[in-house]
Each structure stands twice: as C-alpha cells, then as structure tokens.
Length: 419
Image 1 (cartoon, rainbow, N blue to C red):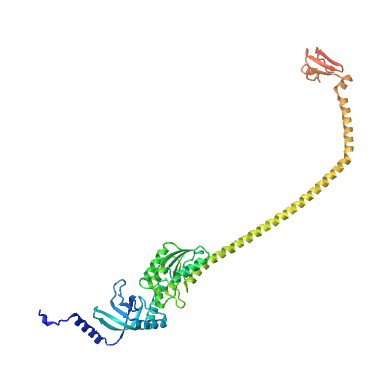
Image 2 (cartoon, rainbow, N blue to C red):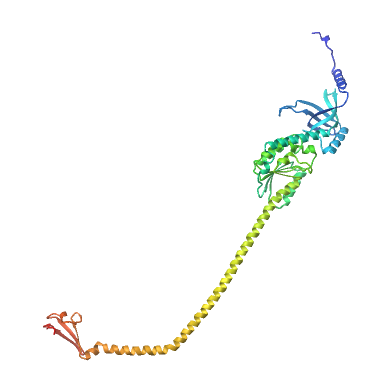
C-alpha cells in the first residue's frame, strides 16, 4: 500500500475540517428532541447535560446520546420561559425539545450541542401524554383504587415517613404531628424526592418501611416545579404504592395538579402539613369517640346508681313505715292483752284455786290410807304383786295384807270356792 495514496492531516487540521464541515452541514439552528440525563451546573452558572434517546429495552444503554451545553446567559432565558409556561425546570428524565446548533471543540475533540432555547409546550405535552397513558394502564389493571380500599386503623399512631429528612416538608410534617399531643411514632426513611434515581429511592423507602408494619405510610415533599414533581408521575412509584398492603398518604405540595402517586394513594393532600393534620384528625376522632362513649357510660352508670339509690331510699322508707306500724300494732296488742290479763287474772286465779281445793279433797278421799281406815285392806304377794283374784295365789304361798294400822303376813291354806 502506497502511503501517498491517502491524505495526511495533523490533529488540528482534521479538527478544523470537522468543525467547518459540521458548520457547513448545519449552518443554522435546529430543533432536537430527547431526554435530559446527568444534568450539572458549573460554578459560573453554565449547565451541562446529556440529551439521550432511551433504548426500547428497559435497562439497556441509550440508543443515542449527545452532550449539550447551555451557557449562563441563555440559561436565564430558558428558565424564564419554562417557569412562565407551567412552572417547569430543567431536571433529569425530563423530555425536551431544544433549539440548538452543532459545535465541535478541537482542544478536547468533543462534539456537542449548544442550546439556545426550549419548547415548553413539547415538554408539557409529553408529561401529560405519559401521565394519561399510565393512569389508563393502572385503571385497566385494577390498580388505580386498590390502595384506597385498604382500611386505615382507628388509631394510626405508627407512621412510616418517606421524604427528604431535614427539608421544609419534613419539618412541617413533624411539627404538626408533635404539636398534636398524641403519642405518634414516626419511622423515617431519608430519600431524594427529585433528580436522578429519586424514583428508585422512593420505591426502596416504601418497601423498607412496609416491612416494619406501620399503620400507614406517608410520602411527602414541599412545593416545586412541574418537572420537580414529575417524579411522582413515575410508573415504578405509582405501582409500588398501588401494590402495598398498607394505606399510603401523599402530601406532594402542589396546589393545582394531582400526580399519579396522588391518584393511586389511599388519600392525598395538598401539603405535608395537611397530610399530618389528617392523621391527627384520625386519632382525635377516635379519642373523641372514646370520650363520648366514656361520658355515655358515666351517665348510664350514674342513672343506674341514682335509680338504685332512689329504690333503696324508698325501700328503707317503706320498711321504716312497716316496722313502725308493726311495732305500734304489736304494742297495742300487747297492751290490750296486758289489760285483759289484769282484768281476768284474779278470777282465773280464784277459779284455779277452787279447782285445786276440789282436787285435793278428791285425792284425800282416794288416798289408800283413808280407804284402809274405812275397813278395806290390800293384799300383795311376797314379790309385791297386787292380789285382786283368788286365782292369782297358790296353796302355801305367803301373802302380805296391808290394814289401817300395819300389815298381816299369812299363808294360803285353801283357795276356797267362788260364791
């Protein structure tokens, strides 16, 4: 091969030719569309980022990539246009259409685009289209209301919190919770809520906190631009919220639009403070319910006690009346009996005395001594058995006969005949 067949260039010559060639091919500015990645701002205020065309296969390297430089002077104009058109800001993962020109920088051999302007309507349109696509897909899969069907405990005092710890949103939430006076326990997960990898950090935070079994999980951040808040339209964030088996509350801090995260969450609130206040109200409502129930129990118990006290007083009064009446009646009866006794006792005593005298007289008449004195006698066997018939004795048996002045002992010689 003859080396003279080909041109020979120095690096500077080739770089100059490349620069002039690109300027010839692209003499004017042009619009180019892509997704921002690796956004950085230098100390002087210039912005640098990669404009990428994402690969159709998730997780793969971009299909194409160009470096972009946005000088400070143009940056101020771009940021003003974005702010006035929908509170947008340049951020990673933002889809943009930029007005740029090709530049080749020989000292570093770098090909880059010099950005001069941006089309905010394209970005807003892309965000809206992607948002609507995701919402429809979640609806079709039954995920849009899944988390909202979960039951919030009556007393959600154990709270998982995903946010940027130390931020104003974090401070507002904690202040509201602390000032409530209730015994909240807040499990915090410090996560970025905007920028590169923020979505992945939020998802990890949700999953980590759910493993600690809080009553609810709260996802909050303060206000921000539409682009800043677009992380909450992320599909992986939305799907994670929808699939959690715990209620998720959001307080994204946007007064106008609702993010996809808001749509799939159990409850969404305009600010972190409002989100905290909702949790406080859950606990307060339960506390008030317990207080009302306590008051009801107290009133019913008081009513029962009052009724029982009234019954006891009435019973005591009735018993006192009955006892008094019974005592009076008994006393009257006793007095009447005493009066009767005092009237009849002498007669009864006299009557009974006469009866005793008569009985004494009869007893004296029947006294065996008196009977014997009248000529009668009493004969007994030696064993004391009274003899009333002759058949009771035998010949030769000894008999003892009592007479008025003693006894006569005799021996039976003959029973004789009955006349």
